[in-house]
Length: 319
Image (cartoon, rainbow, N blue to C red; front, side, top):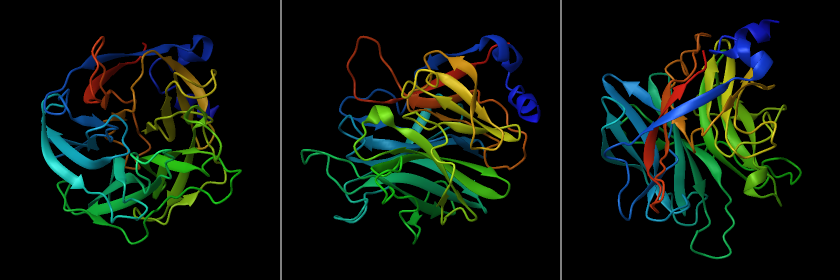
């Protein structure tokens, strides 16, 4: 009963128990990080606000996938007009686990510092056949503008050595929240021999923001989803699931009181594509998280072929 009451703090969740109400979205074009000939920007982080400025990090390169990219960032006062500030994180040393690309960043604010999570791969996209071996690392800074220093324990989350595990092929796409004084890193994983459509979600938990991160015995916690978007919701965790996974899971909002076992509360229509969100309660450990209202994603242009770019979505929750 307690779990139901908390899940139902999401707008419209009482109706969702009977009819599964639908969450919808509107889109807004962005300046500064929008469509640009010859430039790829994709996989934006969650958005944080520092003083009067919003910050976002993203993969930037010149080809459509993120497998030949570095991490850049931009700032904005209104979430619409953005100023690209520069490169935040370069590729690692040639031949290292992150030597071919660093991409899909996300951010954690903790202990008065900024922790930039990112995915790295050692294998070049330009050498065929390409088979990513991605892992997750962390860099830290005293300022959201950097400079960033990689933590000694990188990669903090690696693919499993057990081929039967859901994340034995690769791990990617960190998304952080603080719960009970600990750092919860939700991520996606793929098993050896499986395709992108069989991606699942796991969680790893640490006592310190820089790790070590210990994978949960409950993994995988969600049986699908190619993009990881979670937020603090009441005393639990909500997750938005896209088009990848079993039909009864995709295009939905899921809620979990304990952070491990999720149940559906809403359908979603045309949800974010590789989206991040503005989540002001994500790192407060306040047990008062509210539904997300807006965020950023890979943008879309109907009828026009462009390299990926960053757009904005706003969320309309059912009454």
